[in-house]
Length: 71
Image (cartoon, rainbow, N blue to C red; front, side, top):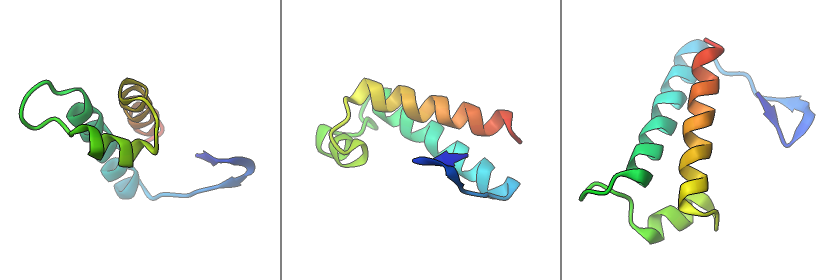
């Protein structure tokens, strides 16, 4: 998984990658959920560091899917 610089990479074992993929998918769900479990705007702002909520949800869901395909 490239991190900022293509010359730098991060290695995760399969259990860690599965766990991270699940966490990312759940964050995406909590960003998109219209119900009471939805992350509020302040929480989304902290997690996304200023990124738009829908962009953050898409990014987390895409990254989760990418991790799953590499397992």
